[in-house]
Amino acid sequence: MINPISTIRPPAPISIEELAGASSRSSSAGFEDALKEAFRGVDALQKNAQASTESLLRGESEDLHKIALDHQRASLSFDLFLQMRNKAVTAYQEIMRMQV
Image (tube, rainbow, N blue to C red; front, side, top):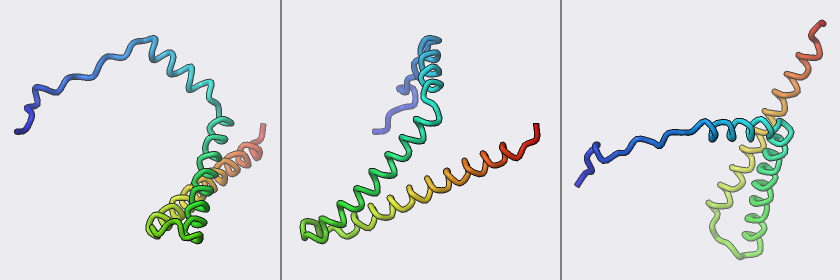
């Protein structure tokens, strides 16, 4: 039996204190922290792909699809990180070319 729509409850309201806490956390987490976290994520995916390949070569794993997906995920995350770096460098160069 399908639940009627009337059983759906509205979301709980958010208090001002919760909003203030969320904004202070996001403002304290700067660009440097975000960049470090992105780098750690890309590094973790690269290490995971390498470990899955090594387990295949040792004969511990036969799941070739998982290994291919791990490598594709690592490759895509690295490409995205590289594009983000290129955009940041381009933005920095544009700012440096501005005349004051």
